[in-house]
Image (cartoon, rainbow, N blue to C red; front, side, top):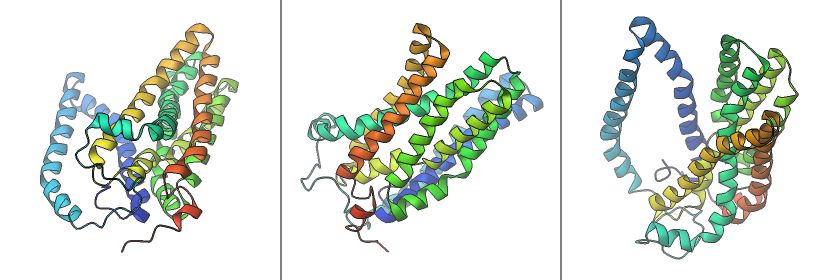
Length: 293
């Protein structure tokens, strides 16, 4: 998608890609429930097999077409450095862009850590409050619905005004909502906070992929984005681990507040470092990029 999309339309395309991911996460449990009702629990793995097989078929059919379209794409003007990176290994790319990964890469890790912890804190606090499983499921479902609906407006805003207009508000709101979870004592209060969390995450749909596409060198994009994905996945894995460690050493509320700090750190880090490396971070830098028909 990065290869065939003009820079000033990149955010809405990648946020839509992230939005379809959210739609799949929203629909998947309902499909699994339908399979259980029509068959049995033992039938559910075959749903995963069918979805995976469908993915393989689609990629096989569409991959060659995407390659032909990508061959005519103009050079990406948002590359971070004029020096060629063609032929560099993953390790050599990591060394060349070590400053970026130590700054903007850490910011992406914090974003992913906050998002990873977000998926755990609502069910954990619902269990702490003694809510029924069906109530918890409803709360999570409502939050997931809000998360799913906001991806395209988020991408359009990023393309029009810059990445930071979405990234910083999204992570700030996520940090505040996460910090408010231990202050809730009823299902309604937790539902409201969970809805705000879903809204905040939906607003930030595609921000990690978009920033990665902005700063990736066009002549070695795939390897660079694999390093970028490593930062994302490391943060996503660390979020629940930090939450559980802080809970074990203190309390569940303390663990949730530590997770909220990750969101606040992500907002501050993105505000500080994204304009340095991405020419599409804000309106001032955006003026230097001309639209591609």
